[in-house]
Image (cartoon, rainbow, N blue to C red; front, side):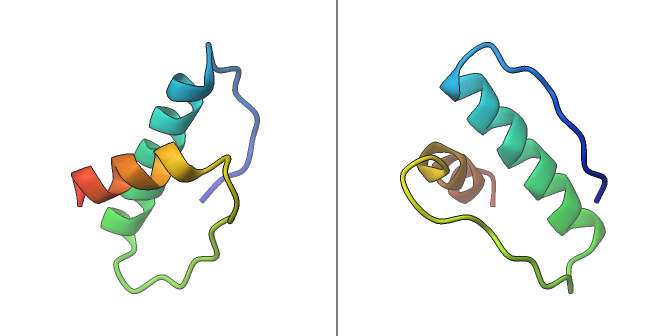
Length: 53
């Protein structure tokens, strides 16, 4: 998983991009152990991941 910065139009766009990034990583590395953030900011990302999985 590479690190970098990307500009998003808004919270929904950022959440969608993050969810896609995490989803692709999980597909490519199903046995990976990952640490994910907590709090209010990632809530939409998690909702999108749930829908995708």
